Image 1: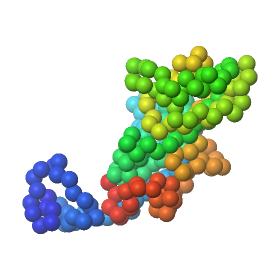
Image 2 (image 1 turned 135 degrees about the horizontal axis):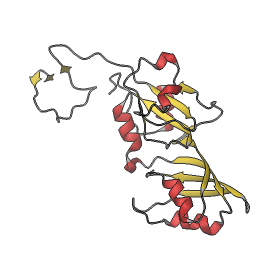
Image 3 (image 1 turned 180 degrees about the horizontal axis):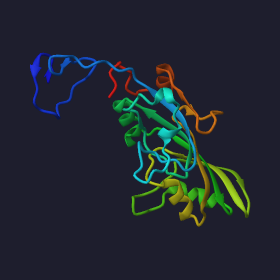
Length: 220
């Protein structure tokens, strides 16, 4: 491989694709259009490319015209029982930026929990709950409806840990009945039907995530 005319043998060397001239076997790699999809993930699908047990994945939800984009990958994960907004892209720089805890991009989840969630419970989730994966803490908790049977609330996270909302709800003595991500940054799920997806324009991505890496025409 040559970078700016010089032979490079170090695979760990960093380059800026839009500024560097890269050649492999004397040829420049083809530029690939950046693709960013907003998908309404359904319950029971896995956020993975394939599953050894044959269970359905989010890639099974994509229409056939996206089947040729073999390098699409999910931005972060939603567990099998969680539904809602999931991003997929072929741009690894963008996905790394979006999932970096330092960017603190808000993710909003609509939660239905068993039993009554009180203001005191919400305060505890905001203060933080210790766990085996570190301190779990919601950035915002909005109580929409509470009763002895079930409660509905919106929880905002800025740094998602494994099963964080489910762990937070369990820590206050309740259990998640339904969990749905409704927004990521300034992107909202809106009325997109379950299982459907749509391509986001570069303008939508830049407006939703100020400071994110811009599309350079060289994805990956």
